[in-house]
Image 1 (cartoon, rainbow over the protein chains, first blue to last red):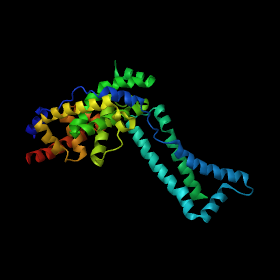
Image 2: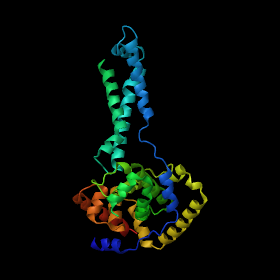
Image 3: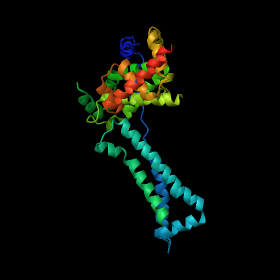
Image 4: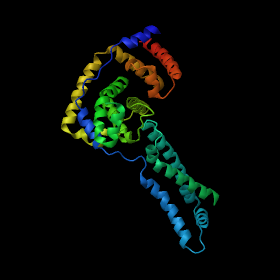
Length: 138
Length: 185
C-alpha cells in the first residue's frame, strides 16, 4: 500500500500552462448578469390567487374567504387540489433545494446578507404553507 | 493583499473579481483537468465554477471558509455533477456569447493544443486517472485532492466539508480500491 502511495505521489502530473483565453473569460464573467435563484414571478402567481380570494371575500356580500374556498373546492375538486395542495408543495420543495444550493454556493454563511438573499425563497415557502393550511382547515 | 481585503474590494466593486479570477483560475483549472482529463469539459466547468463564485460572492462570508477552499468546493461540486450526468449543459461560453468571438476561439484552441500535448507526456497518470474515474465519486475526490493536488488532510477535509477521521478512512478505502484496479493493468 505504501508503495502504491509513493507511486501516486511521485508520478508526474500534467501541469497547466498560462492560459491565453482566461483574460477574455474573466471579463465575460463579470459582464454576465446572474439570474436570480427565485424569479419573483413564482411569488406573484400564488399571491394573485390569494389576493383574488381576499378581494372577493371583502367586496362580495355574504362571502368570506373560507366560503369562497369551500365553493371552489366543491365545484372543482381537481383544480382546488392542484392549486392549493400540489403547487404549494412543489414550491416548498423547489425552494428548499434552492436555499440549500445558495447556502452551499455562498460558502455556508450565517450572515444577514445571506438571509436577505434567501428572503424570496423563505417568503414563497411561508406563502405556500399558508395556502396549504387554508385549504386543509377551511 | 489578504483574501479578506480582496473580498471587501470585490463586494464594493464587482469588477475587482478579475483579480480573484487571475489568482485562482490556474489551480482550479488544473484541479478540474486532472480529474476529467478533457480540455473542453474542463474549460466549461472552470468557467461555470467562477461564474457561480462571482454570482454568490456578495453572500460569501470569510468566517466560514477561505476563498480558496470555497472555490475548490464549488469546483468539486461541478465536477461531481458532470460525472453524474455526463451531459453537455448550456455552457457559460454560449450564455455569454464569447464562443463566437474570434480571439477567444483562437486562444481556446491554442490552449487546448498546448495542454493536450502536455497531458500526453504523462502516460502513468493517464492510466491511473482512467482507473480512478471508474471508482465512486467519494473516492475520486479525496484521492485527486490528496495525490494529484497534493493538499494536506486538513484542507481536503475543509473542501469536502467532512472531519479528518472520515477523510482518512475514505482515503484508505479508496486507495485500496484504486490499487486493485491499477494492478489489473
